[in-house]
Length: 526
Image 1: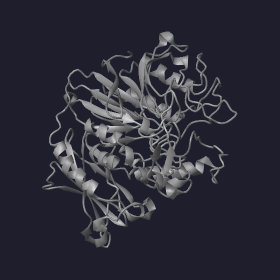
Image 2: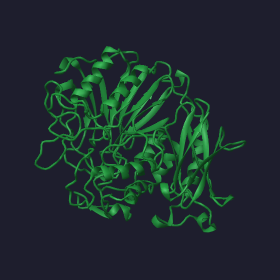
Image 3: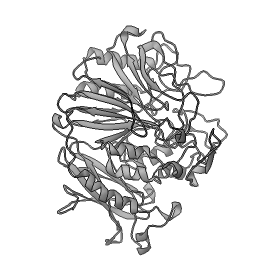
Image 4: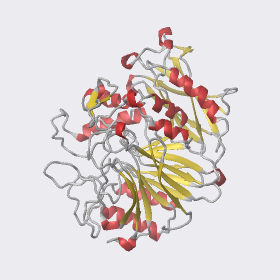
């Protein structure tokens, strides 16, 4: 199967990632960087690239003090004749984070970049450069596309455990050398405090790295920021960020479990009762800690849903199933104009799908379609996702999905594949009108992966409205199985440059392939 060659990337990473790893973390959370003693800005949190397309990309960094962000790019790791990009001034308003947009990049090329942080009062004083690399999307079909996806980390109190190698799943994903990483949400568990230890079923002890901000549920802006900083304490993740660009979406745990707009919180762990207040603070921190093309760091405007075009073979449609949803409920209403996407986002998705000329159209959903996910509210039969367990005609949020599936069929849109996480197990579902109560759609596949580093849970029940058949599943029999016990998953998608076939692999954290499905291009349904 054809995939573009990877010229020089590994040698680049050996040098650049070693330099990144050599940067120790700021004094508040670890040892002070050696160069910080000289009074120069330090970037001990590493670098990230995100939302990379054929000709553009975003580069992120966090400083340990006020600094001017400067990015240099080059076609080679030697950085001879680099192109320089003047980035923003980093300060307390964005928690000393910043993002610089790179444009006019060559398509299908390896881009080497380094970030320098300059003293705002003396630009000649710069800290140790931090380097990274990414590939721009190719304009040629023959180059192929490879990416990985997953979600859910630092959940259920299972944090960074040095005894098991930390977030070692990132090391496995990095070895596959993907073009990008799609994170399907629950990047943090703002509602999940992390204690120094947790008991394991075998009598052992799970030991976490801890921070003050993660000692309680996140309510203040600084606590939300601290939750994002927590993950960057992991060496594996920082190395991965310097190697693989990301496409990030969010779900509930960036704010709190199962939240929805307008919710009034009754949990005694919270002093802030208005979920919208928490969501605004979480969204701000989210925009500060990830390079996302449709969000301006620290600003109120912008959106999470967007489309990332990855060349002629692939468009990625990133959904936001959290911001515009209606309240969790029994979800059995016969009309539901708002649904889980909101009318404006649904119309945007239909419009962008119909405009897409890519062979494959990945719909990146932060929640599954036919898997029943209950709200978990004590004493109430409310539902959190789309399905509610009634196998009959569409009700509630299913009505919006039925409208979308009908649109895809009647517009003869080919190559749609749904990817998600959320449920903390891995599975493959084939949706077939011949087995469904609602039949006005073409067959399609939905693949589920995760968690990255969180508790694993038994397989969710299926709702028969759209006729899902669970072709594969791996999940524990018990609830909240720790990362030390396994059941951590990610998925890989490989689109062949010659045949345009899409191969989807569901993998364990050590890279073991659990399930493989090859999909053929150009079909309305399969």
